Image (cartoon, rainbow, N blue to C red; front, side, top):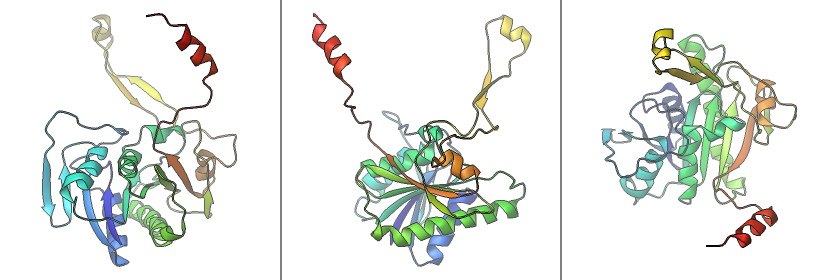
Length: 261
């Protein structure tokens, strides 16, 4: 297969390089178009009406000074517009993308951009909790890469819904198996806003924050990815790309009809 790889951790990141190594080792033709540096948390952000620098690193690697979604768009719309990729993969992300966190994810954002352009797209992420050495990190990425390779080789058997992304998450160093999951409605990470400003600056009205979160919470719904991944299972789920209208419009209709210009 001809596979395009994107991510949000940068083209030199261990995750994307391990995935490329695994796919090439299995005989697949891999091209990397990824950010020149770490661009996590970018969701589906695009760089509109500003120049975006793209630098050729080698014959199969391009570094983009833009967002993960920029990478997918530029690769498919221009850089390789005459190439028919069989699949677009984003990752392997350095950390989980389950539950509500998929809304923030640049890894998922690159995959959703590819899906919106008509391609089958897979987002791949791995839990690095407990991987405190480069050797352990490499092992976790290799485990996730093998999961991704499995889905690449089984992709023709999947009835791929239009405008949907296959979202894969691996628990890292050990896995109890693979489960199909629903995307949870909560974030696995408890969000924080750590105030970094001194008391003196705060009195002057200047505030500096670090937004993040490391503590985790579980889900009460057994089949949700947030719950399954923390129980030690790898998960697979489809995510919708489009923001679809709902059928719950009766109250909106009455308000719209009552408007007088």
